[in-house]
Amino acid sequence: MINKLCIIGIGLIGGSLARALKEAEFVKHVVAVGRDVAHLERAVELGVADSFETSISLAAADADVIVVAVPVGAMKPVFAELSAVINADAVVTDVGSVKGNVVRDAREALADKLACFVPGHPIAGTEKSGVEASFAELYQGQRVILTPLEETNTTATQTITQMWHAAGAEVQSLSVEHHDEVLAATSHLPHAIAYTLVDTLAQMHEHREIFQFAAGGFKDFTRIASSDPQMWHDICLNNRDALLEMLNRFSKDINQLTAAIENEDSDFILKLFKRAKTARDQNC
Ligand code: NAP
Image (cartoon, rainbow, N blue to C red; front, side):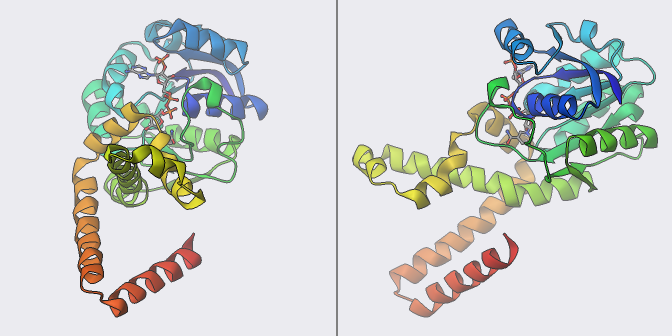
């Protein structure tokens, strides 16, 4: 059981974690930290947090577990503030969708406190943002990837593993590099493609009519383009190398499909679509 849980960034991901842990009676007190008092007040009104602070130092000083749930590009200054105030037994984790750059930032900012840091990433979410969008069931049966570092204290990793289990999630460990490669392929590339597809259509002269005729398939495919632009901007730039590799690979494949359509290469097109259907039916 966690006595005092400090969540920095009480939006969809941080808020859903707070709700799940409260429902599981795994936490006594949740203190939320953020920049906007109206958002923090709403978190308390909704019962997601018990109290709030706008100062990281005040909120985190006596917390047992601190969860950093702000966009990945905003984590470094948060780690720097934490480094100055956390007590020796506190455990710090994050929920960032990218691990390489977050770990680099944590190494620099947390410095001699790095042993308490357990990098993490829940593989769960929606296209919605903010505490209003949070819900307790978000992590039920979903995976959370932890990427503990050589320096990470084993007890700290156990604490964070137990916390995610209490929220209903399964926990798996990966190396930082492997996490970023896998997520570039399965999450970051699809988001980049969905945003670009919607933008391509929106730039077309007749876009109003095009969107009017958009059916279920288009809506399914592009749902994730409704996600928070700042968050995905941060993710793309913070997982640059792995994402570029996937984008180049995808560009090559889409160019091959373009050529096949130009050349009416029915065999190539049918084989590609059959391969893709089999892969999706077997794996998703
Ligand atoms: P969100 O709903 O927008 O919540 C982000 C929170 O961070 C808000 O409470 C916001 O509160 C605060 N915040 C925003 N910008 C900040 C800044 N520059 N400095 C300090 N605080 C800031 O976003 P989310 O979906 O929960 O995502 C949070 C983290 O989870 C991100 O690192 C993301 O990569 C990761 N993640 C997201 C998903 C997903 O599907 N959404 C899935 C897995 C992991 P104020 O505006 O009040 O400060």
